[in-house]
Length: 300
Image (cartoon, rainbow, N blue to C red; front, side):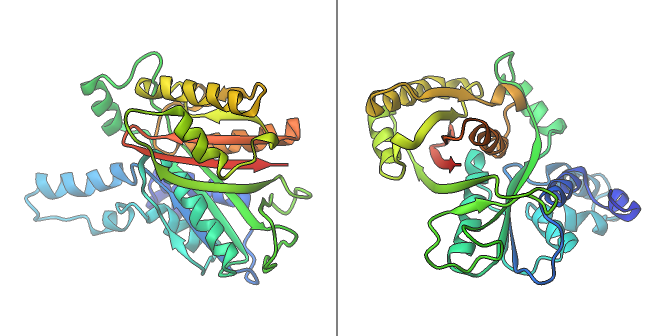
């Protein structure tokens, strides 16, 4: 569905982002549309082509056409151009919680009535550079496999496809025009940092301060990715069930998509699918080896 010019001119990561955005939104000039597209790696491959050419040719023959697509906010910018979006355009880069950073920004645009809908998501591509780094330092194993992906969700204020309701309790995921109704509600998004040594009780305190555990049926975590985080995820899952006084099922998603900075965006799509099937809340919880953390609660 891309034009010949887009296929020739735009890098693969940008094409991935545009196609994901088109599946979530149809251009509507009457809407103020905000774009928040997180990315962890950015346009590494396109940037490398630009820099390697500069080095190889001693700066004598630069490739200026490569530069606009080499910056980390290129996918968000090209999505805005493609869809005619004129509200906020942002590309948060926050490692493994890049998607949640984008989700928080998009929600704020709706809460402050600066946009009628927000397209929030994340994108990262797999190329020879993360593959080489992972091979050099032993990151990639049978358990931790590299991945890539693009996901975009269309958000509007609860109760209105155009937004603007000051007392709306939550933000809803609004499907494309050919799909009837709303997919789910995003009731909580929270970002933070955790301490070492990791303390599961402290983490559950942080979660419970923002989420009513009585409404949560599934704890969806970023486990089965970085081995260093496995015990942390398991301890939080156990403590959540203990705090709730019942079993909160612990599920994972990285065995389906691989490990990459934007993987939690795929986890978000899994959470939405689960909410639609079980008609109960799903808590998405993400940790970064660098100390970042994020939670998102999705409800029917």
